[in-house]
Image (cartoon, rainbow, N blue to C red; front, side):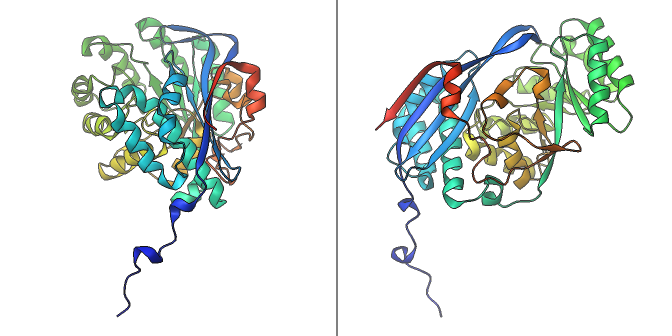
Length: 380
């Protein structure tokens, strides 16, 4: 009988180059013109970029929305747990960072998420593989769901929908106001008339409602018009209210973009039928994989939240991901493409998943400095 290998016979995965320093940069990119996101007026988008420096000269990258939080400070707070560890030991780094200050775990998870993404990116680069191949690919093309709305008039949104349908996109997400029933009904009517029958649409209420009575009129109208999902009717903490609303609707609810871990996703998977996973929030690539496995076990679909380059890599490995969300550059609401080194390739409404080693989120650090408000470095 062949004996199993002893631990001493197994190559030391931790011998991969260790992280010597973590750099973080807060960048602000102005919009071409102001936008409306639900009840929020927006003139710019803030991002936090993370770059790991490895002992062999390698790097790992990550990026996330700042969203009015001290995200750069959160990154630098957890960075010491990653310095000195190799990307192969990313789980040990994450566990140490989570255990250091348990009461602050919910807040620190945003910093941990970016460090985890950067560790996976560094690992994939070291192996010379795109992330999807490292995880085990299931497909090479992933449907893209573009987003329209952002305070535009009903005729303007209808024209956007006609254009997107003509370019091969098969699902469109519409941002609604959430507080003006007449305006939202007119917008949804215009969208349905503009889209051919084979092109589906969903709506994003952006946490506009607090009660089922508030939500029901717009939800019923969306259901009558054939919407395939209603996103974020309530805050994710209101998972019991989400569950009650779901029992009264045929159309699936889509929730979860700000959930931090698998426990939150478990509650939401019991309440709704579509999970909105965001690796930059919910524990990095590791946390997103946990959520994708949970969705698979519970027969739920996943629509990742923005960052299509990264989430496209995950969707290529996990069929539970129905599509990837993308705010197209011409919309102007997510100018992150101005930072990336590689342009997303879209063909016939699908993202052609990058084959470049890493997680498809490499950016030009020097170019990003043009938008920097502040930067920090931890380590050598």
